[in-house]
Length: 83
Image (cartoon, rainbow, N blue to C red; front, top):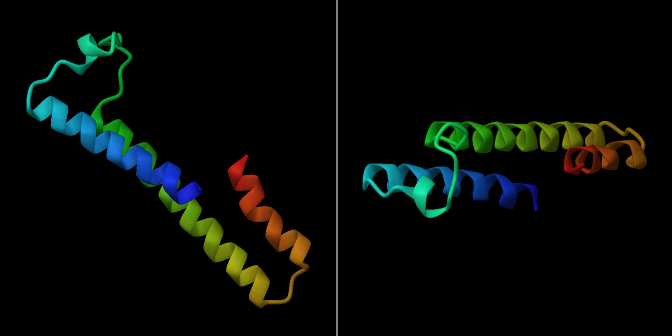
């Protein structure tokens, strides 16, 4: 589910980029404020940062599992990230 959230943000950033490139005024269509709407680079940054966080937590989870830490401690890392 965490990968799907980050993938959604990346696709949303691509969608914003495509709309801006084809000069579709999505701020007017969806009644967004032009000063507070996300730019495509902001959406890509949020999605990429979240993907990096998910990848790092997965690596830490696997390292803790293979080094013999308690399963309850290692299994809490994805749950904390989900919150």
